Image 1 (tube, rainbow, N blue to C red):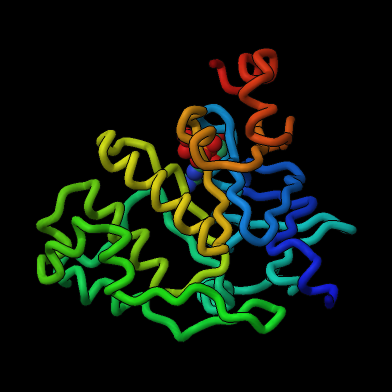
Image 2 (image 1 turned 30 degrees about the vertical axis):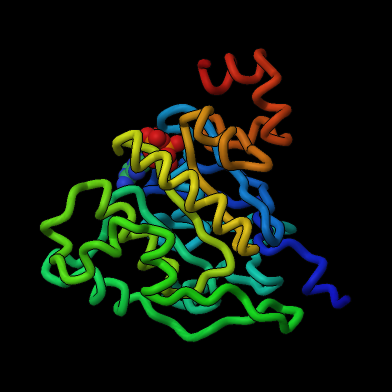
Length: 250
Ligand SMILES: Nc1ncnc2c1ncn2[C@@H]1O[C@H](COP(=O)(O)OP(=O)(O)OP(=O)(O)O)[C@@H](O)[C@H]1O
């Protein structure tokens, strides 16, 4: 095996970020391996969403401290534009739904389409088509011609995820997938994450809901005030009342 196969898919070390003059992240370290689901947890304002934005290079000013790194597939992405990291196979689903309200479900999916992708070892990565996505999201399959603007919030959330998958990502960053959606959609989102993992796609999700994270994640990092304070297996976090109380308030 080559080093690229053995190294983690995403390596973040010493990542800081600012909104204007306000520093929000202070040297964040985390890793995501191939096929892993990793939860980034913490209270409101801890810096979860900002960490995902800083990884893809959106909205924040970011800096990697000397000796640190920001690598995807072993390649330095610290100076890459968001569209460049997307083309490398790093998908990002923001917290707010970003679909085209005038376009149909199918046309929204076509906007996200990219060519088939391979893993660094040359094996084929999962390939998503509208047909495969409609099997994963049956309610989208029932309304392929409906304009995005005439869908419910939960359906729009599903469409945002499905469109990101049309970009054939190897890793998906999901910002608060369980936030503000109906329980049925939360359950569908959990099922989707498990299916992505079963296909070998990695997921890094920002999440406040411990139950949701427990249902889908292998490992967890806990952020407080822009720093990682704890990392462990998901099971160990759930079994640690002191850490849960201190950093998550549950
Ligand atoms: N666009 C922005 N401009 C200025 N400050 C911001 C902006 N977005 C977030 N912040 C601040 O950055 C800090 C981290 O916010 P972030 O959204 O990353 O937290 P979070 O852990 O994702 O919490 P939440 O669950 O509330 O989204 C907070 O203090 C927040 O007020």
